[in-house]
Length: 365
Image (cartoon, rainbow, N blue to C red):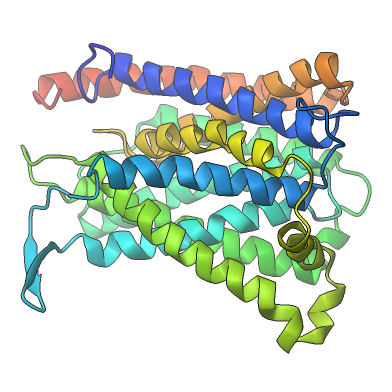
């Protein structure tokens, strides 16, 4: 990165700054293509599924091209194995499943936004679940002896405030809040999202926490292998969804599926600009993964800093979207929730100060 040491607080701040800025751009791009009277290219606004399909294509290529062209996929392994006469990193056997989980997380994230709930509520549900997953993963890996670090009380307090902020959003949701839990589509989509993210976060931290002292933490290699596996899995998923109505006619009445099929058969005018707009979303993925796998930090801490940064960025994008595209102004509960998030950030800063001192004393950074 920019003249900062690996694992340092300064490097962490750089990653969070890049993540924040790109997330704001991503949020504004969505509004520009779907909510404004005309897109930045002067074409009519797109449907949500159509835009997200094209945007995801561009984002996926943004991640995939550097991973292949720059040779990041040549992972620095601590335990290579021979398979069919070829020597490959043993890490492939769990990074590839992580990529498959990524391929499930991406479309289920999109589908959460198409359910009969507000975008803000969908975002809060997903962010809160990832924060809790990070704490659970730490607890499991400490019990397994994989994670040797302890969780600071400041981190646990930050988790509490972050979840409290999420609960404010959820309980303030008035129309259909309880019925959402009985919605079959929500149950399937959220269960798939939650399970896939839990497995992915566990694998990320397993990789990070099982490196011997002094061994390289090749985050670029992990990212590349995961993205290659995710791309292959997403192609298979896209083909399955595209052909699903042919073999299961009842699915032809599902709006998300019909809109996806239509976006391929009759592409929107300017679809290539929507795909190009995925550049910001793709770059966000780099920063997101590198924060999740940041050296010397717990899953509790990295999950929190990742999700809270995105929440603040999402609020910022909402404010800018109000002035640029006349979108809704944040509600009172949005501001209260943000206040709890900022309290969580304060406790995280205290935990980071202690962790940095601990790592310096152990000469890990």
